[in-house]
Length: 239
Image: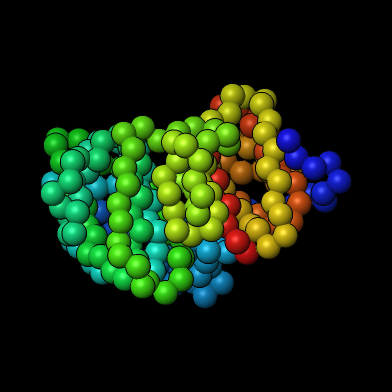
C-alpha cells in the first residue's frame, strides 16, 4: 500500500529513439545512460544506477572480458543462451528467463558470448556499490521473478527469492495486463528508473511506450497505469 499523503513523484520521459546505441561486429546495444561511444554528460547516472543496457548478440558473437570493480552487475537473459567469459567462464549457461548477479567488489573480468544457432538478447544493469574492497561474488537464478512483491534483486537485506545486492535499492520486473494499475512509494532520498520492454504505460500521467525510459524523482507516489499489456523493469535506488 502507498501513503495517500505523499505528493506525486516527478517523472521525466526519455524517448527510446534518443537513447544511445552500439554496433560492433555481431553486437547491437542500446544505452539509457552515457556508455561506450555514446557520451552524454547529462545522462551519467540516476541515483546509484550507472548503466541500463539492452544487448543483442548474433550467434557466435562475443563481448570479450573487461575489468569492472565497485558495481553490482545484474544480467537478465531475455532470449537465446549466453556463456559467461572471464572470471566465471566455467559456470553453467545463462538461458532465457534466468538472472545473474555479480558483485564485482575489488574487481573481475567479465564477458559473454552467444551460444547456439539463435541470437542472444539480454539486459545489463549496473549499480554503484562504493569502493571495491570486498571479494567478488556471483549468484544465479534459473527464473527471474515478476512483480513488486518479490524483487529480482535487492540489497542489503534481500527477501527470500531475490538476488542479494551490495548496493542499496531493489530491481523489479512488472508485468501488467491492459488497464491495470500499480503504485510505488519512494521515500526521502530515493529515485527510480523505469525501462518499458513492451506495451505502453502512464506514470503519473506521463505516457511512455516500448523502448522508452522514465526517470522518477522521489519522495512521493508513482502511479503506473498500463494502456495495454506491458512489461517494464523498475530500478529503485538512493538518490
